[in-house]
Image (cartoon, rainbow, N blue to C red; front, side, top):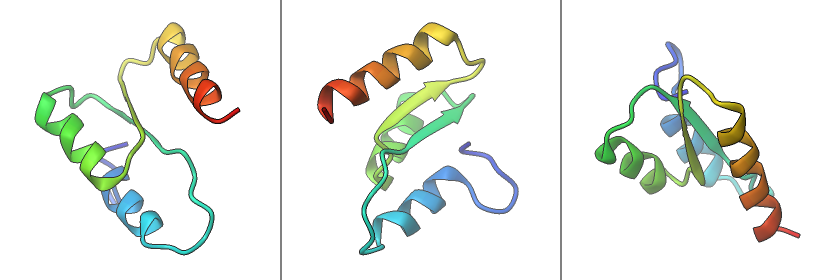
Length: 71
């Protein structure tokens, strides 16, 4: 989530992306739906952005996109 109290998804993603370990596909869940928030996520290396409240079709679409790109 973009607004976690200890470490948010943007900070966590930046740390993960600096690692030499295999890189995960990272989604962020947030209520921040502004274009600049999305861009902040993408600039940090987050792969996909899902708005809250979470809708099942949105999760299904995000997973389908990942599977299409990584099969």
